Image (cartoon, rainbow, N blue to C red; front, side, top):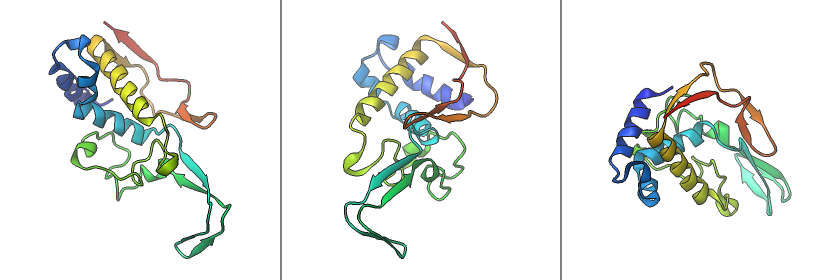
Length: 168
């Protein structure tokens, strides 16, 4: 759906020695590849809300919340705040090259002391898989409509999958 971003990503991948057999560590350091992965996670975070139980009282915007209260951080909503992400519904990986977002602004893995323990590995894996597929194959999207989301046990994913044609 974003031929400019795809072209830029393919061009970045082509700079690596070894092509499809490029060093995984070199792949993981590519800035636009990371920006594409982060922008994808911004638009489609694995979980929409992160819940926590307060261990001690908390005052928020005039509200006094007692210890034991369950609060939620709206990941999906935060990632669509126009004040943080201009044109929030647009796929714009460049935003992750232009600035660094705090853990309170970009939170696909949760945040704080209970941030997903596997986040660094998951992002590394995402980069390697995406780069490997794009270096070896051409993909064509068969879906033209909006991606509908479905809630699963603790996560969110595309309803019915996303149909594509893969050509070598």
